[in-house]
Image (cartoon, rainbow, N blue to C red; front, top):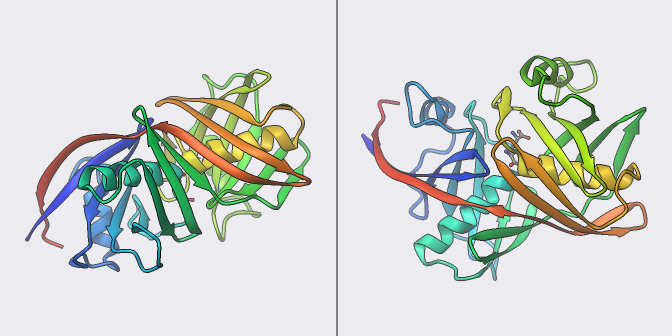
Length: 263
Ligand SMILES: N[C@@H](CCC[C@H](N)C(=O)O)C(=O)O
């Protein structure tokens, strides 16, 4: 059997995207998704997304997200932005979109090659010493640190992701260096990839909110530098919570193809 796919990337966080509006793709085939994301035997990606017909009135499409390990997972911010760019490529949307993902409804806009995605409101932020934990559609542990460039993110990220507190549900782990009042450098260990990725959208969103919640940043707009490029996050601080959270950055089609699948 052969399968048509598209490859997208958002600040180096890369995804296989499949147009599943006809529901042809077998959704519980973990081995197939894992194979498609494999960088040596398959196409290679941090995750895979299905664009499906909307189930909610007013929506343009539905997003289904899998991590590279083949398991369906929680929200992917860079993935969501890439799927909006794909919906625009397919002619489903123009410069605005509304869709539903596993964490609920999302709005998005496209302008000058950038995709802005509205993320879920954040109501709870846990702070333990210098570390923070919050959910921006996916769970994120945040550690502010100094020498980010020399850090072994895979080793130190895995140690946190599999520790007693997180090992059951898992977490993504973000290591962060503050560059100025509203600017941060971020490296992320991703659950389900079980390695560092070049960028993580829900991760930088969590970092921006954590920076505000821990009084490192007083503004409501934060610039985030990842190894794959620059993202920005804006929000409204609402008492102890955060609303109108928007993640903005580039989302690009890399190639399309057809792959032979034996699974
Ligand atoms: N790359 C993502 C996050 C994807 C989900 C994550 N790996 C998890 O399982 O929580 C992003 O851009 O947000």
